[in-house]
Length: 269
Ligand code: MG
Image 1 (cartoon, helix red, strand yellow):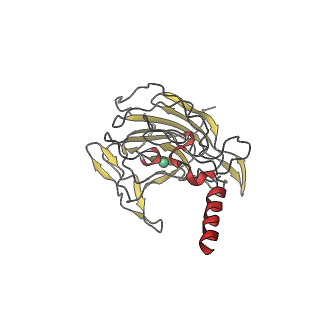
Image 2 (tube, helix red, strand yellow):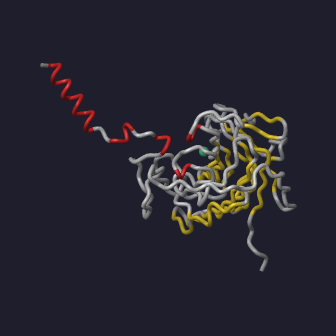
Image 3 (cartoon, helix red, strand yellow):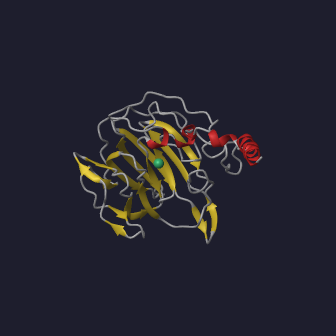
């Protein structure tokens, strides 16, 4: 009798368990919340994945303009720290060699010593030529603007994943308009224009906006950032001022060879 009850209970449980228990999360989720006003869930598995366009790959490095702050030139990591578990700044934990720095899985991310508000940022990066892993576990890093608004870095060459997690996605919020990715191992460029959120006291008076060019192709066009970017959750703005830039360690190898930033001060009137 006990066995029968157990069998019936097991059968009932298996029948009643939501479908997402069996879902392949490499392609997204069906059980996540939505941002207010969005018809898509965060990492929605049904959200259309952007079409590929061929772009300029393995281009020469772009020289920093004279009014830029060079954050990394292929050798010098002095503008960065790796925070320890308590958030205290420690020495940079990434490997630096041959004109690039490379994420060391499990050894933390990078945080700029300086803080920034509105800016134009140029980044050159490459995922490993040898493909390991898939979906979000393949060449995943991130440009963590103000430590909380992520422009996704991901090897998105023939690598199915959820649309809002692709290269240059505003993670969990906006897929890129198109997928302008290069092949694994090839150098790629991001050009990001960021307008920081503005607060009066605790109140948000202007959200952040992000524009992104991926290998010269526009993939985000003055998109309104909906809050901090989170995995499987909806982020809510919390008041802050200028903050450091961070580079994500997602426990997969990614190389960076150039980062420079121009603080945006507006037109001279
Ligand atoms: Mg990432």
